[in-house]
Length: 322
Image (tube, rainbow, N blue to C red; front, side, top):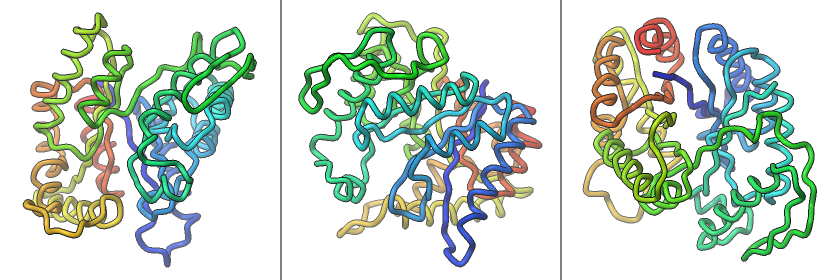
C-alpha cells in the first residue's frame, strides 16, 4: 500500500506566527522524504484559517526544493479559479523544478465564499472545471492548443514549458459526488477520494467508480486511488479520541460551517464515529486493514490531526502498512 500525507496548513491560533505554520510543514516534508512516504499532497484553500495555502504550486516548488525522493501532489489545484493556460504553465514548470515528481490533482471546489470572492458563479463551477482540465491536457501536447468552448476561446497557443514527465504528470480528479465520480470514470480519469465522507460511503463510492469505469470501457487494474482519511493517534484510545474530537470541532467550525437548522446528526460526533481513524497505532492499523477489504484501499492519504499523530504515524503505522 502506498502512503502519503494530505497536508493542510491550519492556523487555528492567530497569536502563533504564521511563519511557524509553514516551517512546521516543511520540516514534516523533510522527515517524510527520509522515511518512505510516497508523496505529500498539498491542499489549496482561500480566505480561511483552516488552511492558509492559497497557492499549492508555489508551496509545491518549496517542498520540491527541500526534498529529493517523494512525489509532490496537488490536492487539489482548484481549476475554476485559474485560466487554463496559466494553470498548464505553472504545473509544467513545477514538474521541471521538481525533477519530474509532480502528481497533478484537480478539483472544482465547493466553498461559496471562494467563488464569490473570485467572481466565479457557483453554478458554472462544474463546467469551468471540466473545460479547464480539458484545455490543460491539450496544452501539454506537442502541438499548439486551439479551443472554442463555453468559457474559453483559445487560438493556436503553444504553451511552454511542456511537462518533464512524458506525456505529462499523472492526473487525478477530486470526486466527492456521484456525478463527479461518474464523469471522471466516464473519461477514464483516476480519482482522489475525500477525507469527509464516512468509511461506509468511501467503500460505496469506490465500488461505484469501479463499475462506472467498466461501463465506459476503462480498466480499474493498476490504478492508484488515494483515499484521504483524517487520522488521530495516541498511546491510548481515550487520548486519541480527544484528538479526533478537537480535529472534528475545528473541521466543522472552520471548514464546513454551520447552517440555519440543526442537523439531524451532530456533525462532530459523525466525524469522530464514522469518518476519522483514531486510536492506538495498533488499532488504526487494524482499521486500515479493514478499509483494504471494504473499500479496496491501495493508497492511504493521511491527514494527521496533530503533530503527535504524525510522529506515531511515521514511527509505528508507516512501517506496518507502507
